[in-house]
Length: 533
Image (cartoon, rainbow, N blue to C red; front, side, top):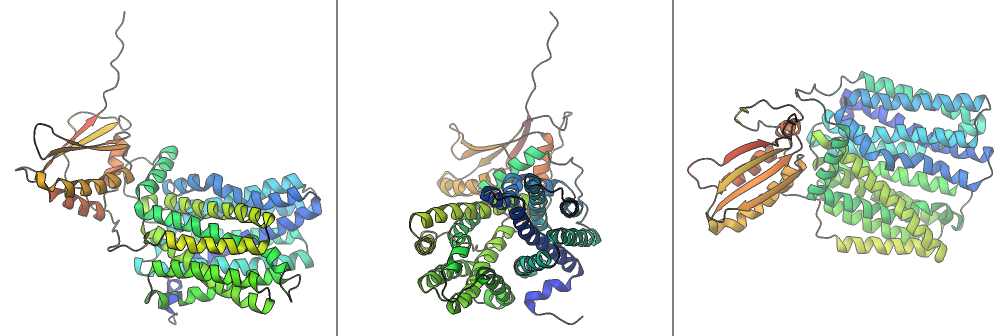
């Protein structure tokens, strides 16, 4: 097979290539469905509210089902789950096509089926984000994620154009039929994948609600992921101004026409595709912080240029550069998010990332839309650009780079004494105590390591954590943490990674006792049985 440029090298792997094609097909169905549903709604009702609700129905499931879908993707078999999302979209498209051809599609029913289609799309994103790091190695992960961005932007360019041609020459039902076919192709491509390696754990699967709680807890206790979530929220809060107001910006361009809005969107997609091809070369020269900082400032400057000098000949190349800046920032942040997550919680973490992204976009549409109403479109876009500059200055110390990448590969936790009593799987809570004897002169250094330990324990699923000093023995400390039950305690031990082993070595380096730190495990004693009267 002829070698591909480094930006396309992940496509040489048959597994990733098949999944990437499935992802491209899935994104095409999304853009085509949005265009067809929006146009069809205008033929079913004259209510502007119902027309506007089409977009709401399409995106609302991401907010409602973001974390639950991530939890399911971490609990269930990811191959079958991903395939099921495509089957859902295919069946939904067939319902839309059948009702449209039969003339039975009403405005409320179209809204309901659009929401149903959005459910399928909301369910598929976290699972695909979790699958990608499993099918490519760490060295090619940035290129693989960039290719995912290319798929999304190609579909953004091709999908609306293809849907428009079918609506004009055939009917909206033709769009839904094609969507069903594309979803079916994606379904078949996913099933061709052999699936992730079988999980070796003998423990029962996580409970749904507990899995969601663990996802939120992990995000809160991970400083790296918190930085990424903040940066993606603020970036989309800024950049949504231009995209959400683009129809009005296009109207005000000198030399523009009815197709200007679509052409400008296509320029954004084209710029994103071109930039992604150059990422390997650029990343050899600049780190992620430089990508985010430069991309944010370039986006801000070009947004101001477009509204300050409203000429079509200037706006179109500026939109290409904006697309390049946009994907440079978005790709850098998604790489940072992926590398901050171990596999056992990856889908939940990426679903929270997607919720932060969509939250920033939704808030940006509201804020800058209101400002445009109070002032003008030009001043709203300029205000968003100024906000972007302020964000760059305010977050300059929040780095996406780390000295050493965290190694989340699983390692044995070590030997623990087996319990001397019978313990039911869901008996608990379980409390673990570890006693340390340190040099009192190193108490400050020890406290710093223990704070890192606290975050690590809580990220792994512990409900609470504490560190106590012995008032009768200087330098003696007792660490405790609590797991929900015996199964969750065993699950936390299975999540022990090379990073945790390194952190354990840092703790043990402070211990000066003649014996290793003593570890004890306790199970909560239930209420005694009632005695007969």
